[in-house]
Image (tube, rainbow, N blue to C red; front, side):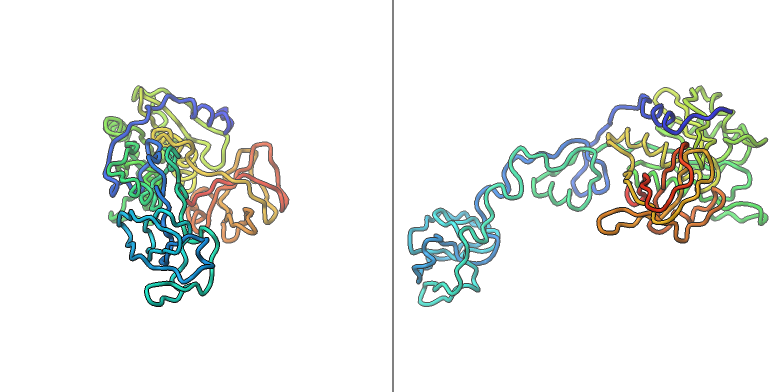
Length: 403
């Protein structure tokens, strides 16, 4: 079987006609973790007027050498201060308060002594001290948050400051996940013998897709029965945008999935990619629905889901990229195991502002070792043309810390 290059498969994936972004409006309090579907633009300056950033006295800076300065009164936060300061006058002003007209400086409480309704300057301050200028935070028309961003605590706070009651977010694509194989035993089921394998793939991938912003439909496990697999796929395609299965795509006697997909009326986009792990991957499309048939080994299915399922989810959410790739320096020699494009579990650490790669506690073995993705894990990418690499070589690394 001739295998596509990794680069060609990614180009083909990128060219797929994916549904345009679908959106919905949700309350701000329900938007955490959702993908923003429109730019958030400031409608006014922040602050809209000079504002005190500390507790103190609003003064004319020129008066600091001419104390005592008469106190006119108080200016609590939130009050509509209308008094106009004249020479030799000050107003006690609190953090967040509008600076009185005519003032240009706030001198902190601890820098003055109060006597007989006046302040005496103990320690002068610079002109404009402790005053937030108009537009210090942002100016009207500024794009504060770009669409495609996953909404976090800071985005929530900024939008709340803009009085954003409802937020336009991307509708979550629905991804159905199932594991195939008669040897697979689902969670909670009693194992009949030690040769059976506890199901983990569908839960690993389900968690991965949820982190990426999708709504996940867990379909559990299906044995090596063509009719049962066919029916499960048909039902999944009725309710999901993407159907992801694990197992049944290799060349074994019980690998039925690769044969069933075309019978579903789906067009195979590609089958088999020159990558390690997961070269037996199948991507198909039926109208506006997608099928990804992934290998059954845990590490293999997870890597291929990152490389092929996450970009589809990202496109449906209107995001520019599915994951972050950085350049990192090898902290030790690396021995390449094949002539394929390899995705090797590694540790990515930052030292002096630069990414470094090491393989501490990463086991070399089959594509079943999911524990290699624990810790500060990342995927180091080495191309078909690469051989063994010496310490100090720069490599591309896919970060797994945030999708």
